[in-house]
Image (cartoon, rainbow, N blue to C red):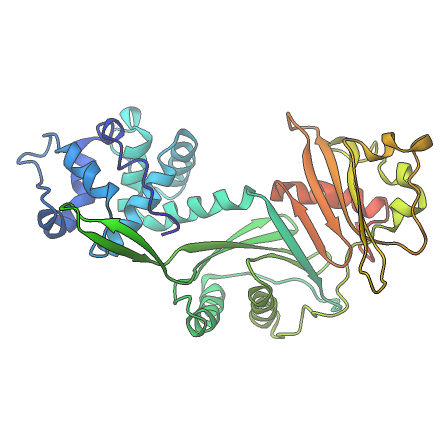
Length: 385
């Protein structure tokens, strides 16, 4: 689990919102464990549980808590929201799952029912939520003219999972990887769930005795492949895992571990800001963007002192004389942050660009619109639109 906090199952008032029938179905496979912790099942199917005892149990998870129970509690707790309920209901209908008492279901009732019928649906919808979180991507472009992946099936994904697990196991992260893939037009998005190094935290048993909780946190990484330009963009928590994905996805999707070369994959340049910053921020021809401001610019001098200058303002161009940046020809532009007002967004969002191949977005979905602006203004190297 990625965390031990189970907000749904540690709040008595929320526990009471779960239909006793569904809670019974969820907990029945773990009766022996519940008995060892002093929790008994109600005598009749519709009777209420001892919610105080259940909340106390889930507030103090121990090493003997069954893994399957921990997984169920975590995923159900995460998806038991109005948004999660809508997503699970749509997916249940799509897959022909029969949901009991649909009109009277609470979000928790829905999450439990779908979990019991097909846990992979809940895991998949949970994984999708991580796609929208802030991410920085490193991009690699193939020199090959054949860039179509063809049909990506479960067998191919299983082969990649096997290769990833071999590496993760050797590096102390276990054999727990799962790959979810989402076709989105010219792009295919991959969400990879895997384990991290074991983590130990202190705990207290019911009698007040100290103990420790030992668990493996989960990690979510994101890959986006654009088959129009043959580009693989990777968000991972370390450079060695980035290299692992670059090689394994190249090998299993195209038969070549070097399909996405590590060297020579530079994607971005900030030189348009040096040439004419006002023209570089024009976005009137980009559907989906209302305006762009330059908020921050990092300049470096390659000398023995390693000097770096950071210019920062709410609107950097407006703060300059005549709205023009004055940049020394000896300075190297190493990073820029832009504040962008998207048409469908209430508030502007930040986008950061670094020369070579790194871009950071508050929302991953902003990348497509930004790519059109970056291409037309010359920030992207050798990129067809």
